[in-house]
View (cartoon, rainbow, N blue to C red):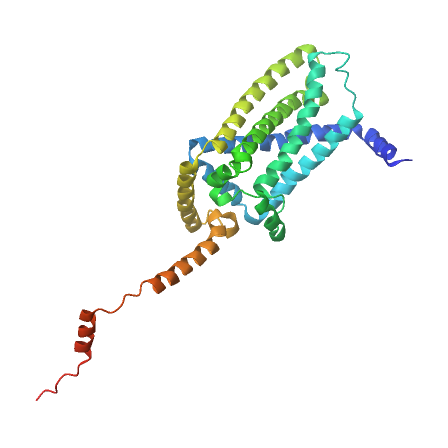
Length: 312
């Protein structure tokens, strides 16, 4: 039996459970996390303080954060995406024969799923570098990846969006990716309801369509707001955000809201260079500022060094 046939037989034997697990993970935790993530990023429109405070609460998990990320986001995402690719390969679209709205949505769901997966992979690479491993990050950062610093959230996010192709590539890439992901989730809610038997009749499906469309429009607005909050700031706004973030960091460090982790600060990477530059400046200053002695200063020196007569 070939590997493909064996894989097909495994999928057929457990298709009922696999498809329901696939749809469930697409909603919880992935869909739920996406709603929270976009809403958190959109809070940047309310100011640097609001966004930075939200990021602080997320990273206050400390050592437990990677467990939450892998257990609640990355592993479910990989399972959902890999199984989705399998469904696309084994499924058959009849859009060419029957151009009904349902058939179009079936095709769009598959294409937006692929777009969403590519977008999310590059999104994580662009801002986080995939792996928090020193030698790996040393290679990724010069290439323009791993650009997000949680303790300088707003400023580093805006700077990352301004990289590559005169600041045009990433904004366009993120806007298309966010919209594709929102459609995939909103339409996926509708198909998940059918998979779980929540709306079977035509009337129930029509009501579900209205709810899912309203949800999709709302999340599109939130996602677009989050995108604009990241791409809109200019150099002056970024500098102001950096100053605010540094003030908040000192206060949060004193209250114990954040851990002392220099790798999560943008300033930490520039610290070594800044200290080196400062040392060189001091040396140059001491070397340059050497004034020749004047006649007045020589007379004063002779006066100070002339021995005084002993008192009688």
